[in-house]
Amino acid sequence: MINLNVQRSKQIKFGIEISGVQLNDIKGAVRLMHEGIEYGFPIKIFDGKILVEIPPLENVIISELRDRERIGAKLEVIAGDIYLTPWEDDIVIEKPIKVEATIQEEEVVIEKIKPDIKAMVLSELELKPQKKDIKADNANITTVSTAEKNPEPFDIVLKKAKKDADSKIKEVERKDKRKKMSKFASALQGGDGIDGFIR
Image 1 (cartoon, rainbow, N blue to C red):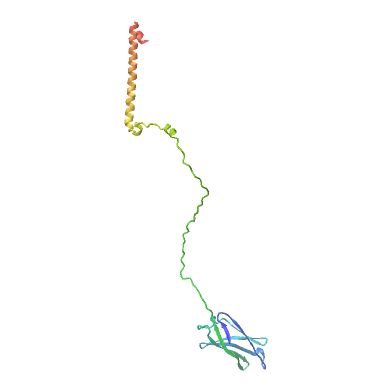
Image 2 (cartoon, rainbow, N blue to C red):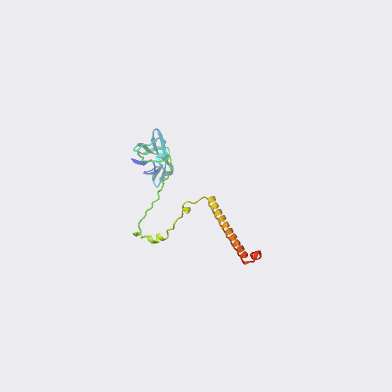
């Protein structure tokens, strides 16, 4: 009995005794029968031995092969007009487990990577509260006038400035007039008359 892996090729070697015929005249084949179909594989004669190579049966036999299934096999030899079957036996099928996976659908998953930030203390420094110089602070305090607190509109300020300017002009004119009158009176008293006032 021969065990045969359906996924691998296998070489079978037969030892025979041949007499009364030339080796070149011998032809033959190993034949397998499965579900009413016969498959033949030719033999080769080399150095007094018969060699036959059986390819992977899963590529040859049409019907489904089952694991540990038995298939009838025989060696046929034809020498001239003579037909012989010097060997006949069963072959046990070995069918290893075959698992195939195909991609049905691809999905791209985008993973958001969160930044990993770590911090560590390098040094520690205790800060003492600073004392304020109250006197120095008081020396820099300035009094804010009522006008700065409550600023007046520009037109009101302009009117006040114009009024102040008019008052100063009138005061200058009054002083000038009094000065001229005083000079005129002095001229009259000195007897110079109008000529003295003009000078």
